[in-house]
Structure formats: structure tokens, C-alpha cells
Image 1 (tube, rainbow, N blue to C red):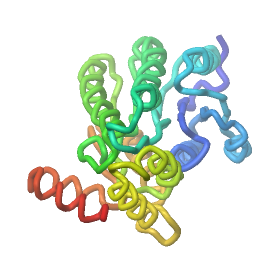
Image 2: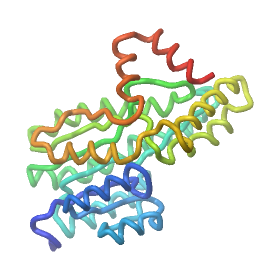
Image 3: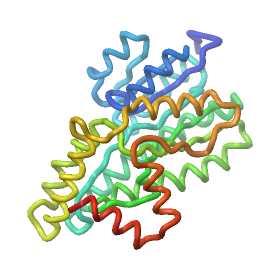
Length: 279
């Protein structure tokens, strides 16, 4: 094993080809970390390579890709110091009209891929007695929206999984942080639209599907109300710098107001608030 730097901490950011992952990688590079960036679309990370990052081709659902990435990093540096589990996507469509195969894939990307990567990184972290794991959840891990049953199921799972992990790893000096973004200006909104309309745009849920599409275009389109990915990157950097980070960071448009309504006003009021946006 060789080390390219005895001082600089080593970070791995998944889903770094765009949006929150890419912005986070840039901030970590500015912070002086050795930054590995992973995604399926390696060509979309050439700008990060130019800035000094080390791109890795990784499909988070393929164990061989995940193992190869962790092995490469650990062979050179011994351990990953900062793991940012950012890879994920949103699958929308009515529960009834979504196939179980699609639902399983949603879990493979948003939960099981993250879990396998973390499992592989942990032994070296434990040996070192230090490390920070940042799991990108969503305000959707605490709330719900129409036609998002499988997406929200994965994010609710990430919340519970991360809470258990935080307690399990604390004795080993490893910190686990959850980031709960709200509406962020990324590809997320556009990527989920066409599949949602394909599943539910012409059937019994069509009115709801087109209402959700309208709301998503309003939030994620040009001139929409979405926050920039930099607010997520800033929260991640804050967590990494902190001696004792918060367990959760809620950031971005609508996140705090919606979580407040959900927590203090109950299900019926929240149902009305959410459905009023999907008409």
C-alpha cells in the first residue's frame, strides 16, 4: 500500500456527475481534501478531474464497481476519511401502476447500494478509529407527496438506517450525518417527470399525475423556487468541519416549512397542504 498524501484527508463522493454531488466535490477540493468522485457518467466529471478530483466509474447497484472503487482508494490511502453517499434518484408514479421490479431498483440505488459501499468502507475506518459518513436523504424522508410511494419509502428507510448506523459506529470514532435537502435545482425534477407520466399520465391517476407534473415544473424549471446545490454542499462541509456535527441538516427551499407542518399540524393538515400543490 502506498500513500499519495500523509496529511490530506480522503473523500469519496458518489453521484458526482451533476448537482449536489458535483458541487460537494468542488467544495471538498477547495478544502484541501483528496477527492474521489464516482458516477456512471464519467465524462460528466471531466471538469472535476481538471480541478484535481479523481473520477471513478461506478454504478452503485453493481457490487463489482463498488468493490473496485473502495479497493483502489484503500490501496492508495489506507482508508476513506469522508464518505458522501449522494447517489440516488426519484421514481414517481402511482403505487398501483409501478412495477415491483422498478420499486426494487429504486431501493437498490437509494438504499442497498449505499449500504454496500458503506459496509466495504467501514473496516478501514474502524481500524483508523475515525471517519465521517454523510448520507444524503431528503425532506422526503420525513414527509410524503402524491405518487412518490416508492421514492419516499427509500428515503424513510435511509433515515432509520442512518440513525442505527450512527449509534453503532459512535464507539469506533465514526460519525454519521444525515442531510435532508428540500427543493434543489438539480436534474432530479426533470428525470422523474417523464417516467411518472408514462406510468400514471393516462390511467386512473392521470389528474394527479398531471397536477404533480405542473408542480414539479414550477419548482424545478427555469425561474423556479429551487435552491442551488451549493446550500447542500455548504451543509456537508459544515458537518465535516464540526467537532461534533448535528445528526441532521435540513437545507433548501420548502424543507423547513414542510417538516414543521408535518410535525406540528398532523396528517390531515399536511395532506391538504400537499394536495393543494398538485392540482
